[in-house]
Length: 476
Image 1 (cartoon, one colour):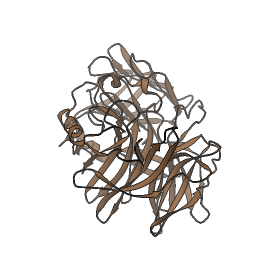
Image 2 (cartoon, one colour; image 1 turned 30 degrees about the vertical axis):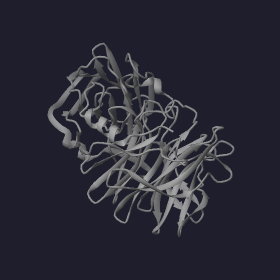
Image 3 (tube, one colour; image 1 turned 135 degrees about the vertical axis):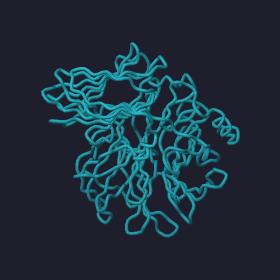
Image 4 (tube, one colour; image 1 turned 90 degrees about the vertical axis):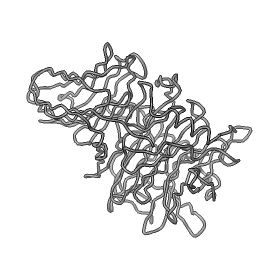
């Protein structure tokens, strides 16, 4: 088990903020060194949001899983992230895996998966509570589930708390012994937690593992968010190695089942996984991990000592069984100068700042295809809408570094297409049709330059909107 020096690690983080390398993002949470992944423990206490996330401060590989912690009141100004939870004992010596946060007695508590392996590499997962202390560390406390139950493998992780009729439960991702994924529900019963069994869905054989589940209610409707691994790629969906999405409908814990619609992906880009929702009253705020497991060679920042980001915070709305995502309104506070666009042409060129937001509406007219090109000198990424197939293609094949390839997904647009495109130094998030679809991905331009946005179409298209220069997050 590695040794972790919190004081030394925290000082190193502080000394390396603000970021200096031209690939470091300015309005996406990331770390100056090490590897980050899943958002964890998202909680609000008073007027302060608490954001934890997985972090390996000792390298850029998926080992030494710790939790980092930061707080914010406005999603713009953050406390300097610090090491908050790390392996210390026999239960979590092989990693503090993902989990959730909650409020008890006016304190932040977390529930996470402890990972421990024996000399034969056999894993024993345990679910443990802890309480955030004034020194920034999580004090590890009671273990509530000591190991995986019979009938399931040791792929048993990522508990997420929720309440029904005032009683606490948690949902957890598991793998059956026949190597199919599902989710179990546990209910608090005095000082114990009772396994209620599987939450039955229509997806009996849907990947080999369900990671990072979460049950979120919108009034009397529920969504089950989860990240299934092992789905077969299709032309317009399931195109990443692993997916992240949800099913929506009614849920009964009496019959232990969901009455739901189809599985929808939450994001159709290259780099989105393991999302978690922060509950702020009726407001549901999602963060995702910008990255993808088992694709480490697609992220050249590893050669500079760090990997991955979190997404911007997104507000979720459930409409007719479908989640709509939009960037949190607080992000508007980053806006600086702006340029108005109101043109009708088959080609429009606009310079972007290194950090920008493009809020655009297209009157399609007779146009059948619109191409948005982000041009970085002799490199480019293309976002193409094809009206004849009602689809969007994102093509990174003309970038020199990082992941390449295409992602294709359906977007319905008859007379108008609208999008909000956020371009950070390497992180890009695009919201289509008021957030009905979202695509998140990285690009790694070789040169430290401002990109050019080129809008072209097969006939004149009306474009109206604004392009904003965006500032950066502040750490204090």
